[in-house]
Image: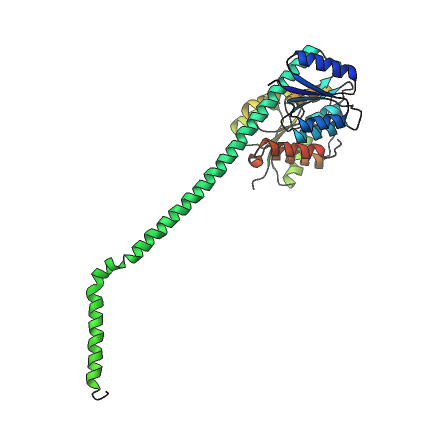
Length: 200
Length: 147
């Protein structure tokens, strides 16, 4: 499947230029002129990379960046600006942007940046899949070890019960004593009876 | 829970002392050093830090070159850059090196403390999936800030 790119810019010339160039470079390209249109597209599709002009017609470009990241955490975000500043570069860092594209740009350099951004998105996606699978496996292993512990406990209790009902084994050894005590009690009873004649 | 362990790299004694005192008073486990060489030595000997906070302009190696070397020794440790000479070029270079933040001096020390804590959370082993990691950054990015 061709990597998907979303280009968000209110300048028609930039949208058309990037759509044509990136399509020729092997990408599946969508464009949006406004933030709400970009967000709608980002909600409907997963994009490998999103190129966002920071001066989109509505609101702050970073509000849009944040909303897109909320829907597509793996997407690589590439803020674009014709007015580079320390504060927007810093915001790009804080929002975890993949790069910061300053206009005017060279198409060849942009192609390299987009290629790396797509690779990073795929790496993040794969890493997340592996982590999620690992979490599932850990949960299964934990459930299995609980079951195994329960089985061991049941087995232990069963063994103890068998050992408990195995008292007769000890009883055999103690049988003479037990028998002796019963005989003794019997003798004592007879002697009491013999001391109390006529009690009947 | 263990205290967050921070390595501070700055050639200005005043900054090192200020951050050491403030962060220690907030129960962080703080180590300081005055150049990249010492910082790297500490990381190689005991790669146990949760966050590295480094100045850019220092005697010898600068803070941005240090980030590359930190990645070799401790690939996952978040790095926060500090600078008194902000520029688009160094900010973009820092972005490409995937630093957690780029803090401009003079800074608000409470905000810097919050930055360090957020960076440590992003790198926390119990952060789980990329989504949780993303949540930490999103929450941090959505806060209002000014330097």
